Picture 1 (cartoon, one colour):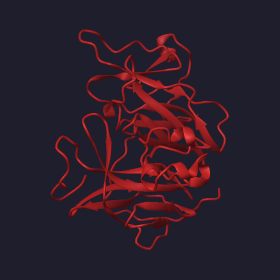
Picture 2 (tube, rainbow, N blue to C red; picture 1 turned 180 degrees about the vertical axis):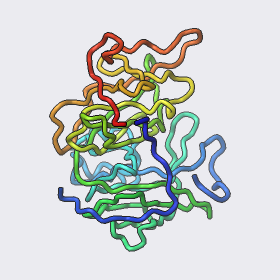
Picture 3 (cartoon, rainbow, N blue to C red; picture 1 turned 45 degrees about the horizontal axis):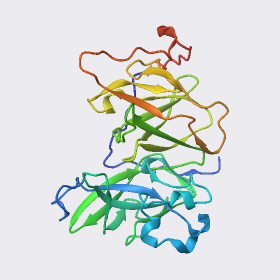
Picture 4 (cartoon, helix red, strand yellow; picture 1 turned 45 degrees about the vertical axis):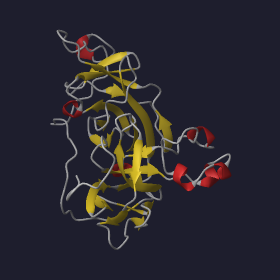
Length: 297
């Protein structure tokens, strides 16, 4: 089975499962030099999780670039940009329409929000703020959320997943630690090579995946990497060719429900003129550590 990538769906049927177990229209008027607006989700920071809850304004709590905010959290893992297709039941996020300046500054645009889940079956959305509280039921197909700014509407898909492992990680450029891999897709597999989750790398190079405890390995979908980077990545000192189906990197063993951080950054090397893809050392067919998981046919 080849790598499976995410795809967009216009209208899909929804099935309720218990949790126990591009904008369109004219662009809004923004400062010169900023990127096209897009819908993002950020983890809702609750004041009960702050050491100094009165030191922060509401606006600072919904901006993942607020200096010092993460350090003030009692649980610092409950923070950051969330892939909206990896929201879990009963989690709280804030949908935002944002742009990024040339220097990486994240600009939050005032917007009103709407969801395709008009009945609120899978969660409650505050149309004026974008605050979203996921419900007790998971979705089997994507929902959509839209944010309207100055008459222009921008949308994104989101999913509600059963409560499972919240896996945190970071993907950076080798040698510079730059956040240049945003939008790349990471896929997770079980011991027989079955795809169990896909997550998108956020604008700051981080990801927050939702994987089942049976997940054992991962790779980066090669076609989603920027053209200026090799289809290869380094993890825990070993090199993995993301273009080879059997060349997966191992996840921590014995995953259990809760939040788990990868023990190391995933590094992707920028292409060098005249040099080929770095040789794989983490795959058995390259003489490295054996970790071969075949896709099902």
